[in-house]
Image 1 (cartoon, one colour):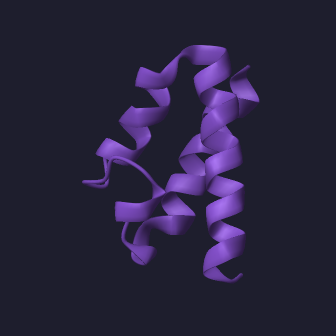
Image 2: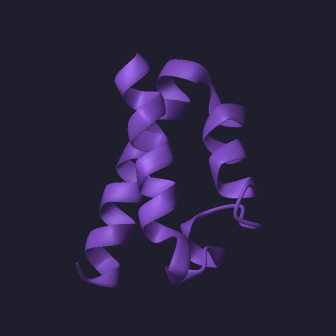
Length: 60
């Protein structure tokens, strides 16, 4: 996937998680990887953040 693909997917999932569980829950996923949003997330963690957000979203 391109960086843009990752950004779209991660930001969309983060928005869904925030809508369901609150922005603090979505922010906590980024915080685990020393980031506050996609823009300061290391590319090495894109797949982990995406996976974490998917798991949370699936619970909703």
